[in-house]
Image 1 (cartoon, rainbow, N blue to C red):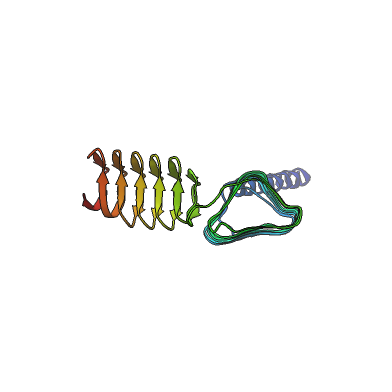
Image 2 (cartoon, rainbow, N blue to C red):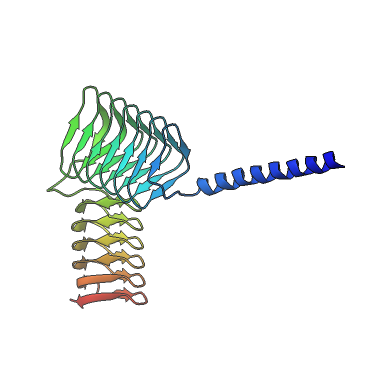
Length: 267
């Protein structure tokens, strides 16, 4: 009887241990607000409220978003996109299988790879034999190539602004001058004016520190903020609790206000 009881207790303890391990794995699989990943470690998607640094030979299975700088160790891997609120730096032979958005400068190590596009508001510096499969755009227009470094294409920066149609959610950018439409994802920030030949759409909780000029309609998500003026040739639609600090002008005269939305003045 004693042996049976001990066996039952051992089984229960084993099941509890397995349960804790499984629960821990499930919790870790969600977007983790962590500042670092140890060398050789593995993580699910990362959404850091500060900076993020991954050690050598580590793996992130998902996107990496950080309010401050992102630093990837040598031979580390990110299976997703990277959005850095400040500088982005990758070590030698690091791999990102997605796009990279850097709030300031972008620096890649030797033999590193980015399979998507790279956009940085500051300078871009590519390590020797590094590869970027997609397009590359520097807000300053400065791209420095290490020996043997290659990119898919270069998007030229005009008058210190970035010609892009999309700013990813949580991303940070300098001034925008899109030759088409422009869409900013949720929680994104544009530090400068936004000018687009077509429509402009700002995601929820996004922010433009400057003016917005839209060649068609202007639409803002809930809780978005524009610190300057908004001028649209088309309709203007404001999300709930969104704010435009300056003057608003709609070419059609149609301005639709969401609940609690405010503007400084209508022209």
